[in-house]
Every structure is written in C-alpha cells, then in structure tokens.
Length: 294
Image 1 (cartoon, rainbow, N blue to C red):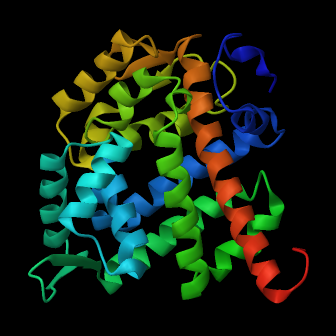
Image 2: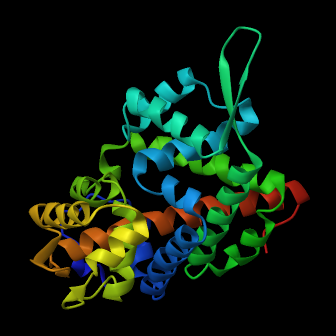
C-alpha cells in the first residue's frame, strides 16, 4: 500500500504510516481481526470484555496493576482522567461487571481500601488475547514470533503489560494520537462496535483497497455478539453519518473513500503499538541476558 490513501495533512505518528506501508500490513490487519473474533467465539466472557473501549481499558488496567497491588477506585479514576475512554461512574459499573464475570476478586487492606485483583480465569484469557495480538503483529515484525510463546512466563507477561499501559497513557495525552474520532464514535465506543468492525474487516478483504458491496447478515451478527437487530442497524447508520460507510439497508454496505484510510490507520496504530511494545520487551529481555536481541 502507498501512503496516498491518507489525507495529505494527516497528523499521525510516522510509525503508523510506516506500518501501513509494510507489504504485509493488509495480511496483519486481517489476522488481527480474525484472531480477535476467534477469541470472542471461543470465550463468551472475554467477548463481553471486548464489547467496547471502556471495558477493554478497564480490563487492561486490572491486568497491568496486578503487580502493583491491584486496581483501586482511586487509581481507576486517574485512569479515566488520563485516557478519556470512560467516566468514573461507568468505570465503577464496569468493575461490578468484571466481578460478575468472575474476572476480579476484591480484597480490603488495613486502611479499608478495596483492591481488585484478576482471577486465574481472567489472567489466562488476557494472556491468550495478547498471544493472538502478537501473532498478528509478527507478520509485520517476524522477530515477535517467539514472544507469543513466552507470554506464559509471568515476567514476560508482566513486562508486556507494563509497556502497553505506559504507551497507552502517553498516547492518550497526545492530541495527535486520535486523528479520527469519528471511528471511536461509530465503532469503538458503541456496544459490540469493535466486534462488528472486525467482522467488516474480514468480509471486506484488503483494508487498503475498496471492497465493493459488503453483506453483513444482521440476524447472524446480532446473535453472535449478543445485541439486538436494531442496535446493529443503528450502529451502521451512525457509521454512515460519520462518513465511514454507505449503508443501503438489509445489511448491505460499502466503505467510503474517506472511511477506508480511517479504518486502515486504526489497524496501523494497533499493529505499530504491538510491534513497539513487543520489540521493547524483547530488547529488555536481551539486556537482562547481557547480549543483543536475536
């Protein structure tokens, strides 16, 4: 793919553009979408966490903060303020939801503050999620291949979580890190929006080229992701209002010329971050061994 599909005045980090220019970018984007959907189909609890950006960020915070004594409501409020992905009120509701899923276990310290720690079921699911994501990024950076297998090692798992969290908070403070808020409004924040975007990615084929008409079966999609027919149609209409797709009804749609670079850049961002985090962890592991990374 050439960078010409992006607007000339696009304010995006050069690593994202370089990732989108990689010859295996389209394959990696397809792999990422397919791997995430396979996880959703195989684990309904994890699928529930993937439902929207707020749930995902809260769950990632739970995983990251386990090594620092667990998530507290005070820390969660700081995360809400730092990322802007969810309000403190909704964050509390998500914590209750994760408790309901048996993904969290609470404990009260001597000062009466509750610390939320991930259960074994959550840690196992999150590690599978990271392995699937790194496997897709390895199509861009093959040296990441061995890292996926090493995520069973607690120290490697913790190092990747720490690196991801630090980079996420740095990006959240950068106004240029979200060049396309329309995608957030249309797909990342609405319930099951990310899962529907992954589905459209697989149905549409190459994320860097026009796909023609895509048929998204409304009934199948609503059952698969546990939402109503009306919700799916409303989401697609919102995506049309944001200029990302043209929705023709009955599940028939096409990605617009303006929407294609938005979606492509979204995947370029994710893959670039996975590559950056993974290589940073590999470099740190190599330094610990006193030699260069192979």
